[in-house]
Amino acid sequence: MPPLSPPASPTALTQSPAWKALRDHHGRTAGQHMRDLFAADPGRAQRFGLEAAGLHLDYSKQRITAETLPLLLGLAAQQQIPDRIRQMFAGDDINFTEHRPALHVALRAETGVPFLDEVRAVRQSMYALAESLRSGSVPGTSGTKGGTTGGTVHVINLGIGGSDLGPRLAAGALTRYTGPSLKAHFVTNVDPSDLDETLAGIAPENAFFIVTSKSFTTVETLSNAERARDWLKSRLGARFDPARHFAAVTSAPDAARAWGIPEAHVLPMWDWVGGRYSLWSAVGLAVAAAVGPQHFDELLAGARAMDEHFRSAPLERNMPVIMAALSLWNSVFHGAETQVVLPYCHELRDLPSYLQQLQMESNGKRVNKAGQPVDYPTSPVFWGSAGTVGQHSFHQLLHQGTHLIPADFIVPVNGPGDKEARHMLVANALAQASTLAVGADNADPHRVHPGNQPSNTILFDRLTPQSLGALIALYEHKVYAESILLDINAFDQWGVELGKKVAREIQSGAGSNLDASTLELMRRADALRKTS
Image (cartoon, rainbow, N blue to C red; front, side, top):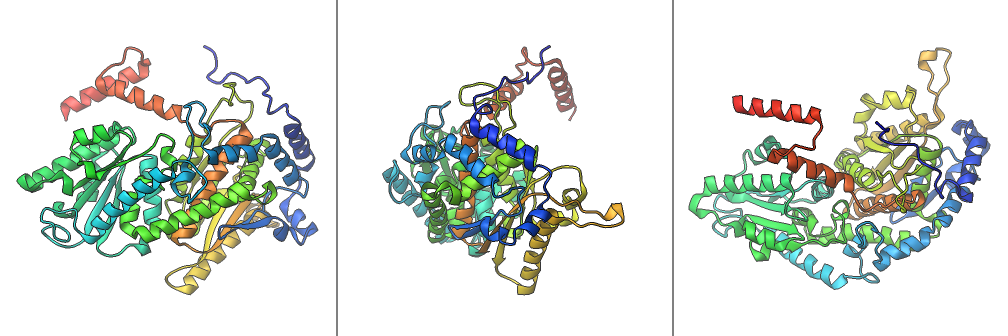
């Protein structure tokens, strides 16, 4: 049997002058330690830092010299990043395997991109429904606030992947902008425990479900929607009215209406927006209901500010491009296979999960634009957790383990609550980044910290809708820029589609083309079901 991944032939990218220059430069500088780089250049932090959309990026704790960045930007110029950015904003078919644009920037733009009239019309409908939920006119069965029982309105988003992770992140990050009369929940797992736990203690009169599925065929989402509908029917009986308890966000409105969702509550999605980039669309309905249209507008404004920076800043001052280039430098040339994300902010605890999908579903590819197997690594594995939790968990491996693991520290300086505790949080973030970079010598080998672990620090005033929008858009554009450097398509996800197809075959009992192990597991699972 041939190997799963046969050795790739050299690609045009790895034979290009810019790539060869980087490879030679790495050979000359790979042995340098960051503590020596800082000692030799007192102005390093000022040189390797920049501002955009209210965020400050410090990338001085990277394994780079004064020569590295120009060489990385030479690769960016060779790969025509400025032209590719213009193509995205123009609505060109940059998702070339699916022959369509990737135009999520249109969802927060005010001018200069296609589809603005459509986007504004849908946003107006989304805001109207959000205000109805906030006022309590829906859900319920009587038209009074909070239904017949009064109390908090519970908006439950049913989605998976991009239809869950983006709005879940935003709603959790902006909790302090949510009033007491409405609470947003997110159910994604087809395991019935997820929905059951969410519904425990919620009066059916006060529950409103948003079925978020582009195709309106997503098995996990529709399964949860059907169970939610059965739950409402069993408790409300003849009083059940779908118009008071359901909305849909989908590109298949006919299917949503056929399922029973009223026309006025069906909000469209577009095929030129991928799921992991869809927070800014009607997929963000639960967020708009939780924080209100004004704060959702501020979220859009923050993303728009980063869009304009990405669109107009020169490569050497372009924050997403520089982060993309550094990621390639670490993963391709230094061999880092993973990347850890460390938000020192409890409200951003869902950021690592969100970035896992954004990064790995986008750039987890094995062929280049021409369909040729790549001869270099593409996306690193993304993971992480909120600080300071990770410091008492996996940071030991970062400091004294054998893996090279670049880190992104996300640090809002100010925020609500005890100021001294907030100061301690920031101090911990800066201490971790410093120690990872510089390390510490000791006569006892067990106490040696080698250091030289690269990191970025993204510092900003406080977590607001605007700063959150800028932060998310920063990573969206970083992922796209990195895909250009790697000569791959960031916007398709055929691996996800294959898994869905095989799952449908297994669920239906088909299995003639499946491997022997899966067939045996299917047989055992069937036997266990029959005995339960």
